[in-house]
Picture 1 (cartoon, rainbow, N blue to C red):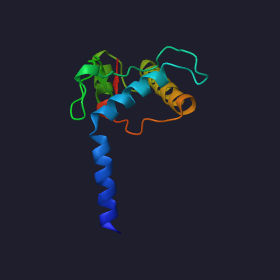
Picture 2 (cartoon, rainbow, N blue to C red):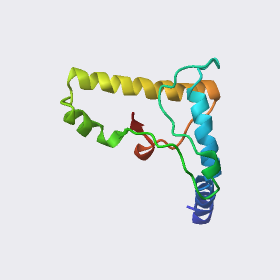
Picture 3 (cartoon, rainbow, N blue to C red):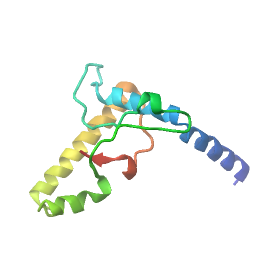
Length: 128
C-alpha cells in the first residue's frame, strides 16, 4: 500500500468535506432535487432538508435551519414511548413509510438530478 497516495487523497477529501460553502451548495442542490419529480415537474418533498442560512455561511461556518425531529437511531425508543411495539403492524407501517420516503428522495436525486448524496448517516437523518 502506498500510504503517501492514500493520505494525500484523504487530505483532499477532508479539505472538501470541511468547505462549508460547498456543503451549503450541496444542501440546496439536494433540496431542489427532492422537490421535483424525475421529469422535472414540481412535487411534494418526501423528506425535509435543513437549508443553510445564506448570510451566516462561510468557508468555515455553516448555520442552517433548525428542524425538529427524531434521530433514526432513537426511532425504536420513540415508537415504544408511543406504545408501538417492534414487529407490530403499526411499527411495520412506519418502517414502510420511512423506506418509501427515503427511496423517493434518493430516486429523485439519482434519476432526476443525476447525483447522489454520498454521506447519509444517522447524524444527518431524522424523522419529522
